[in-house]
Image (cartoon, rainbow, N blue to C red; front, side, top):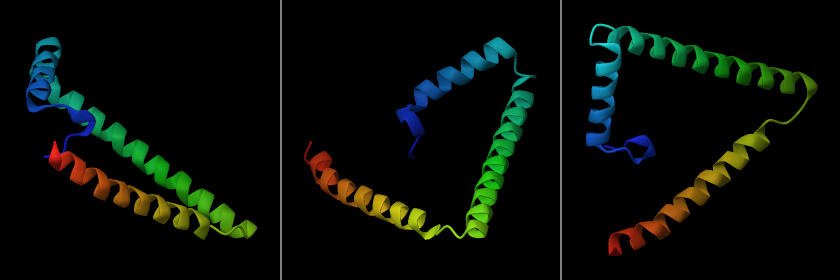
Length: 92
């Protein structure tokens, strides 16, 4: 399982324990629901902004394919770096 920020299972368990102790077991679902709604709202707002920027760029005649090309190059570079560092990680 790939957990962001390299947090181990024990650390996550400790964090959950602290949250339950501070807020109480009956409030945790409400807090989680609120965080989920907030994250969803943020994601929707981000997508709306991206859509508006793309529409505006298309109306102005700006070529948006450049961003796709740059993203492809970055992804290729990441892939090559992972291939190189993968063998180093396996040797350790």
